[in-house]
Image 1 (cartoon, rainbow, N blue to C red):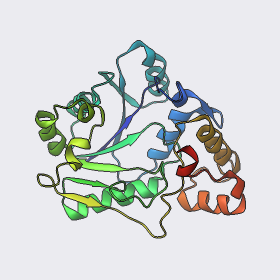
Image 2 (image 1 turned 60 degrees about the vertical axis):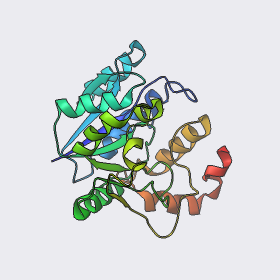
Image 3 (image 1 turned 90 degrees about the vertical axis):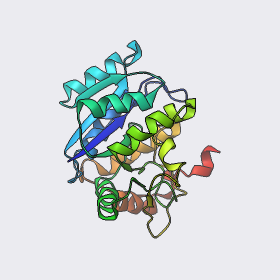
Length: 236
């Protein structure tokens, strides 16, 4: 069984409330969940948000959309994940983030499959970037994150959930998923107003005629409309 945990909160420093911003007539977070739910290797999806009052609306929206919600510490996100894993125990866990509204279920399945095939502790397509930022997928053994809980004493390891795994390659077995061609210069996540405009433009062009659009469809759109392209260097 594979558990997907989607991490999100409304108190973003760069773009507060972005996960509830409308995208093609629905909150961004719901659009992201719709896309994740199309990954064939995921058995359950849980939103992991905070128990802070600022996330009450987020929890309500996701619950009303029919998804499980776990609420835990605002800043100690590692504990929030461990609590969600205790509630919904599975051996394999996928970490995704709520600002990636263009996540691709095919890419998610590919990373999960690579993880299961290689029998490692942690697999991602972010250790060596070749995918657009916004298609990030991390998969890990639940036992590995539980081991990290006793080791992660620094604040950054409590906030950035999996950091305690991949910064210890001598302890945990890591596997990197890469693709050709390298599209790591492309930016498809939502951190700034320009990112949100980009995501809305992609949905406007693609969602109506092909709601299951994926990475290749977005690339084809950008080739047709190069003015839409947002690159990592644009936000430097």
